Length: 391
Image (cartoon, rainbow, N blue to C red):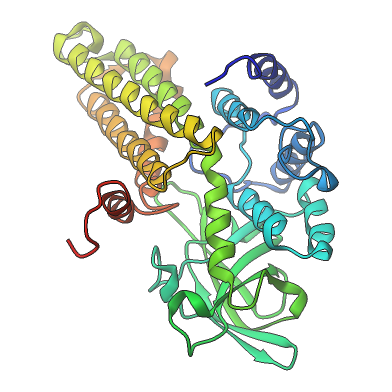
């Protein structure tokens, strides 16, 4: 990976984050603002990232992009946001931006992209359903034609940030006579429309990142259709693929988690009164964890290099995501074992202990969101190993 165009940009981004990022405590997995003041700060931060040319730089110039944008800069930005533990842009907004640029009409681009760049539109995804999680093609939400409009009825589940989203990207069935993917259409939905009810789901993290969304005869006009009628599957899958450029930032998070693991072992005292890291078995566990972190970093680096060279294999994203999320769970479980076997932890590292509890509660969700591990293993088996679908 060519580091030359990245390092001056990295220093610039670090300085910008240090000067402008909201002073919010970031709990891993929690992106919903906890107060109106926090929401205003987050929207201000997103707007300034766009205005500074750090977000949306890869867009076409006529819609606010930077002509000399280097794709490596997207990775650098996300890495530095991770390192600073700063509020990161929502995946749902980046997905929506990509879908609008790729499939939107000029009118939709003019109307919608401007609001994203100003932090005025937070987006959510209205994809998954109670009986159609990873298998989106089996969804039941209907968008029935009524003259030139559509009337939408159905239920969506696990819609992240829906309770404060201004817009939603909806996938609904417009033609029940054709098979699965062919009859789906994507819509850009204002979340304030009559007939939309949002119910946050309280999670074991204590927060409510996910929501149920009920659509009761919600009326949408032709201006809300994103892409071709019946072409929703192409819109959604193209948008999901746009998130792949940020997969490399996950390696930075694993590095930071390993650093927290070492800090924990230096601060935790076991029943004999000594610190955990003084014991050979703990040292061996740390060494094994570090070797796995370095292994995943190699997988991620290889994936990022192919992405930047436009040589990506279909299995690269699923493999990198699978490796990262499964190791994330393993590191969290090791940390909690150390905490549970300790009689005390140095008070100076109380924040590290808190982060481990929070990371543990969120770690399982990461193995589901963006593609469940079971689904990803199947994709890797078929796309990389050539295994038959029914094996």
